[in-house]
Amino acid sequence: MRLSLKQLFQQISAVGCANGLAGRQLGCESAAHVLQNSSLLKQCRIPVKWEAIVKEVNSGRHLDAMPGVRETMRKLADQTRETIKKEGEVLVVAGDHSSAIGTWSGVSTAMRDVGEIGLIWIDAHMDAHTPATSGTGNIHGMPVAHLLGYGDSHLASIGDNFPKIRPENLCLVGIRSFEPAEQQLLDYLGVRVFFMEEVERRGIAEVMQEAHHHVTRQTSAFGMSIDIDGFDVADAPAVGTPEKDGIRADEFLQALLRLDLRGLIATEIVEFLPKFDDAHKTSEKLVVNLIETIYQTKFFQTQATESILRRAHS
Ligand SMILES: [Mn+2]
Image (cartoon, rainbow, N blue to C red; front, side):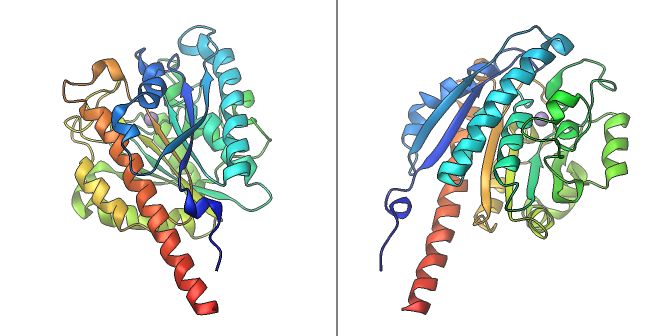
């Protein structure tokens, strides 16, 4: 019986993205560096190995940010694609949620020969605007539309010309703030949305089980894109676009423990705005808790399965 290096030295391969120009408020571009230097994260039971921190290209704000965002997202996609090919998984800690265009373009194109990927999108917002429908021009409100193949053709064709996520393999969880144009696009495409009302009625654990089933039933791997504004403001105060009455973090962490994470290929955590955190570092702790819970659960489940299979074949 031989253990692979991966099993002996479990670690998380992380990519940072220091972006913030596509958000409503500046500041979350520092999140990746804050996490990289976080003493809380250094105490994490699974060590984090930083592969790269992608720097942001600045071409302005709102829609003027577009040329810069295209460049930044191409670089981020290259990093996540390479990390998936080399390590088989990736954790992305980014700033504003426009990062998702780069993260999932890279993950999706790395997996193109293997199969489609599924995605669970945790957020207060739908992020399903296009440049044509957005009132603010803030691209952090547009990544879902672009991953589905809509909006700016440059952003929608990073890596290749196919949609990066098929609508039937995507679901949104925790939604409580959106505009009609966003809902129209998602309704038209048949994307499953678990609004906050449904999360409250059924509980986040049951919702996450169904979300997991939804994104894994016809894919070869799945990811989670976690906008921390999806959580209640009490649990994640340091965000640029807070919406009240969100997902309770402790309930979400409990739900993760009971989720089958063996097929999890990538996790993205975004919209942490360090300068808005409280004296207790509540938001930073949440990010670290998410990383630790997700990867401890995943590694434990993977190892347990492997040891059972080894015994069955010995
Ligand atoms: Mn978002």
